[in-house]
Length: 232
Image 1 (cartoon, rainbow, N blue to C red):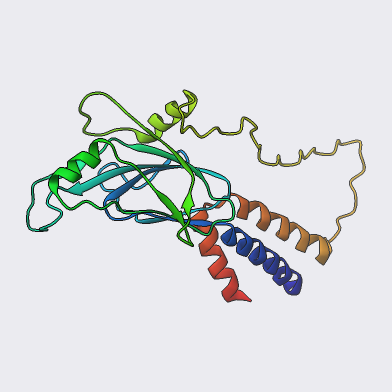
Image 2: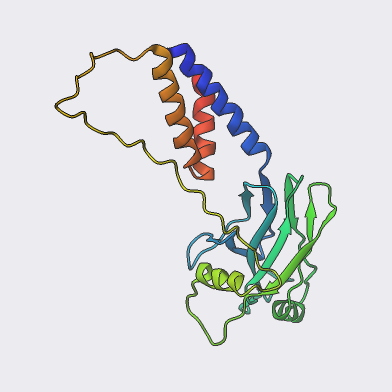
C-alpha cells in the first residue's frame, strides 16, 4: 500500500511540476504598486510592496498597477512628497512566456515625475527583452478617497466591458458531489462485512489527494510540492 501511495505522490509531483512550468513571473520596478491581479486584490489597503508575483495560468492576464514615486528622484534626500497616478488596468497574454516585466521609465526631475503620474504609459517585455503587446486603461474614480475597494472596482470595470476588461468565462465548474449513501431497509438482508482491498484503499487515497490538491491556492501548491519531493 505504501508503494502505491508513493506512486500517487509521484503523479502529484509531476502535476505540480507542470503547474510551475506554465507559471509566469510578473515583475515591476519599485516605483509601481501592484493593486489587483486577475480580479484578486494584492497586499493590503495601505501597504503594497510586491515587486514580483506569479501568474499561474497561461493566457490572458489582467494586472492593475499604480505609479507612486518620490518627486525628488535625483537627490534622494530631497523629500518633496509622493506623486501617484490613478490605478491603471493592464491586460496582456503570457502564452509561452516565463517572465513579463514592466520597464522602468526614465524620470530625472520632479517635473517629469509629476507629468508621468498624470498619464503613465507602460511597456512590457518578456524574458528575452522582447516587447509584450498590452492594452491599458485608467481605473478612474472621482473625488479624494482615503481607501478604495479595488477588487470591486475592477469587477465593475470588467462588467462594463472597458477596453482593457478581462472577460471571464460564464461557465462555472462545480465541485464533485459526494455520492448519496442510503441506509438499507429492515427487510433487506445485510451483506456480510468485507475488508476493502489494498488497491481500493490506495485508489481512494489517490482520489482524495487529487481532489484536495485542486482546491489549494498557488502558494499552497508550491509548499505541497516542496514537501512531497522531500518524502520521495
